[in-house]
Image 1: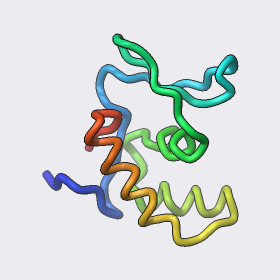
Image 2 (image 1 turned 45 degrees about the vertical axis):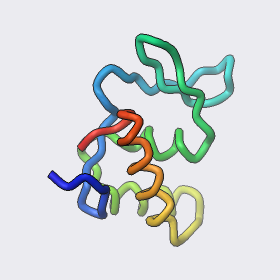
Image 3 (image 1 turned 135 degrees about the vertical axis):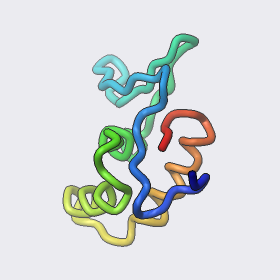
Image 4 (image 1 turned 45 degrees about the horizontal axis):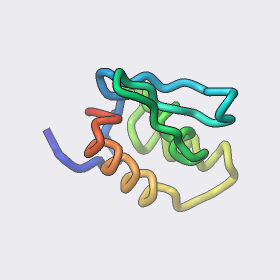
Length: 91
């Protein structure tokens, strides 16, 4: 298993974490038994696409289409590698 994310990686939210929209916080959050991580908009948009069926290339394509942006792959890969280090995602 590769340790770094690449275009073929299919990330999924890590065990013990639950992603949800928190209206009171006006953002997505990751809930876990010891607490909560408040996510910025970019992190929330990436993580809500991490369903274990889409690869990074598909996630990037969807983000670029949704937000009329381009060149997001490097930032998405960097975020996913950081998120994996925090155990927020796995692959």
